[in-house]
Image (cartoon, rainbow, N blue to C red; front, top):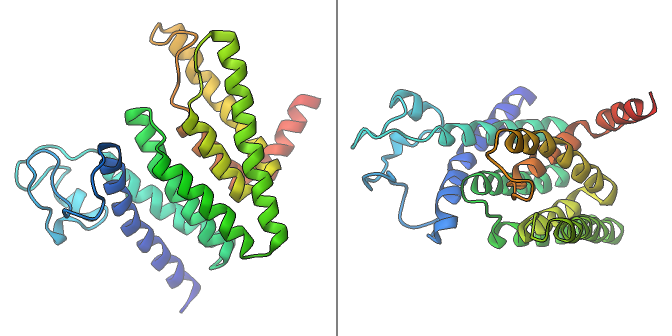
Length: 258
């Protein structure tokens, strides 16, 4: 198969997987099965026909509304499909069809599900973070003892750093400012990226979250001790470090040494 055809196939598979991730995003916080029943409208409960469940295309043809009840369909559905498709394609172009490609696919899908659940419910569920951590460590050992131990060290560095920050925050503000889900998510990411990359991810995630928190406090929508959903910032920082880590590090060094 021509490389361009493979890339297109990988992107299409990503769109289909993104459709399933939408099911997980909606059902997991509600403690519903992601397998049964089949896809249905969240407003009227009408089953979604196969031809109305084609990623991106069906949303456009239906103009973002349910065929049965005409209620609007959330923008999240095509967004998650497109993001997942782009993730699949980007990882393929970066790593090819390798073990690293499949490891980061698993991590990326978990990050997408966790991010959108955290945005809506301010929850990072164990059913997402813990299997991601286990798969990260076990899959690293498939490449050898050295990579496996590196994954364990990365998990300890990610989780331990977030734990230390959480303890410091509770000491300063007198309440939890970072949730346990953030700790488990950072540990899971560390199992894939290693200790040095996960520490850079944590630093970058705080840089990304700081302006949002500052605007919220200045506008009166947040208090100083308010908990900001941190999962989305961890996800964005992880992807930035994964694809542009060295460039970001060199830019940071130039900034602090200027």
